[in-house]
Length: 381
Image 1 (cartoon, rainbow, N blue to C red):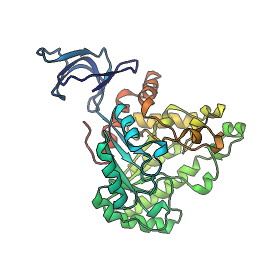
Image 2 (image 1 turned 180 degrees about the vertical axis):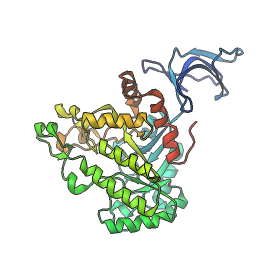
Image 3 (image 1 turned 30 degrees about the horizontal axis):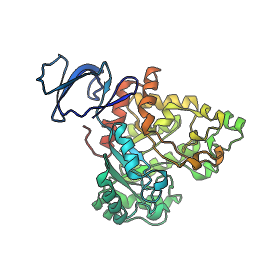
Image 4 (image 1 turned 45 degrees about the vertical axis):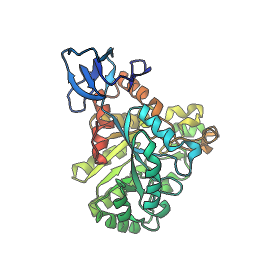
């Protein structure tokens, strides 16, 4: 067991019988955080109580001094790099980082090499995942090679164990073909994950369209590149009746579209990547390529709308973990690869948002535990 204190320092504990005193328990089922004592017997939580319990000599006692205790986290969409891109991070390395950051389950996007579009590729990943410390739930590719031309073996992928399908960030541009694909997928009962962007509107942009991009001389991506695509996809969702999840939304307009869809009764959920809660377009002022992300960091107002949506339960949080090799992130900003490694820092970033009053503690916990678990039909522990 690893315990983090309030300074984000970690202590390894090997005892199987533990009494953890004075923990601040953030239970997503409760109205407020609660100071409590936790009895762990034979490595399993036996009781959480508000009155200090008495235990026998076999128990090691640790005073947590208000350190937070939460259920295990669930990540809705991480880009694991194996097979094909092991030089950016192996399956074992990245899942170990997730485990050390408090995750028990991660949903894996299909952007591997080869693309996760057949049961054979899924079987390869499942075999390699046997030694990984977290549960990996695969999201299959909707079309062969994510090329948007021919449907993958959808029923076979479902039988092999995928929890959903997606085009990731390679949307089907032909509206008629997109409709036919979703009509077919509706017969399988699989959920579809959308990462919506209008490529014509986005063009070769690498920053949020606005004064900061203009000042830096960077080509901009307007917010409507996202909202236009989400609006289209929501119409297709309504037409076909599928269950849909919209990942990594980045602007206020997208939040409003999701709210409207939910109010209409559509089976729609959505998440925001952690970086878009913690940072905004001002981070680009130093041309720091670590902040080259897809979608780009948006405006202050967009960031506030995203935080409000998490606090109200409209959005879940995904970490948006997308490791890159050093060379890919040290290139000039407009040439750098999109992505950021965030497992190691996600708790520190969240605590900073909570300390600033931007993020409510229990909303944060729900957005990383019960809400994403329900989206991929899993239980949190």
